[in-house]
Image (cartoon, rainbow, N blue to C red):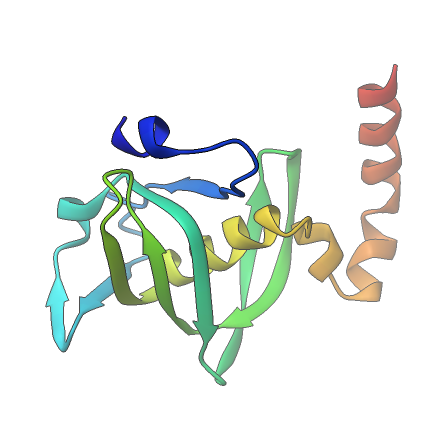
Length: 142
């Protein structure tokens, strides 16, 4: 990996990997410049130090997380994002995303900043999932 050879101690690197190819029931769109590009040509998407600019329009959507097996909730997120990041080869990438790709970028970038999807749940949802969350907490601490 070219970036690893050039990396130095003390250089902060946040890395996320996203792959939404082939998910037909929750479509995605991706634009580079003003041109829509095929999602499959860019998956898996490995991003270093991604920075997102969120659209103002928001919508609720069902989300889950591998960190919280069997727990899903409606999470409100921006409908679109503009992402700037570096690729593993050190090249800069800029693109816009909508649909599942937009949601996945927001979810995974949240992880890089220490935010979990349960932190984005509304109070009523947290209350309704309290039992499941307590059970999961107990199982993972044991």
